[in-house]
Length: 241
Image 1 (cartoon, helix red, strand yellow):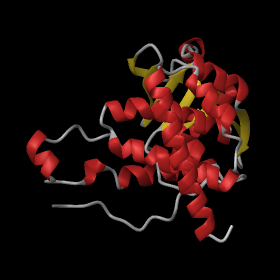
Image 2: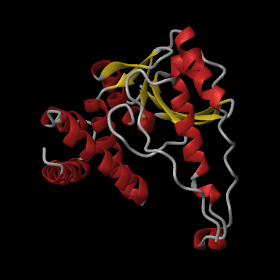
Image 3: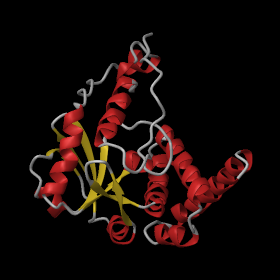
């Protein structure tokens, strides 16, 4: 069985870093992605899927320049947004939150698939996942939880810590139902890290998420958030905070 190469530096996107670092994050995630593993038990059982294209660093940089030039109304969310707040894992795609109308105004984002609340597109070699503001919660995140993250070349609209927690909490019940346990574990870890490092007020965030969930999911989210808070407390205690 062949495994991907290791040894990349920890992923982070602090204020003032170049957009070149964003491109490197995407490239490093591709280099250690699951497609690099060969002859795993899963592949032998289900067959291999198509290998994603290698992200070209210049493409990632050009994407954000294009969005700025078009004055696009969007937020950076997902894994790249997480890396502006905590040190974490590389991510192989760019996650954006925007309206369907804004998305249609950027034909360079070539649509791969689209549903009521989500879309997937390609900008040259870069995969772009889009959360659409037709979803009431996504719309509220766009209005209430927006900030800007300064890169060396330009300032990028990005979701706040609170907005990231809202989005992750909202997604978790669905991830568990779909048995996407790896992603669910990463989301819970992300919430715990954000709580430990930034200490946001959580009651209004959980209340906001609960408004968009069924009663059973509301209870599950409360349980998940309590577990994340306990985990964040342990992290702080062990870190001497």
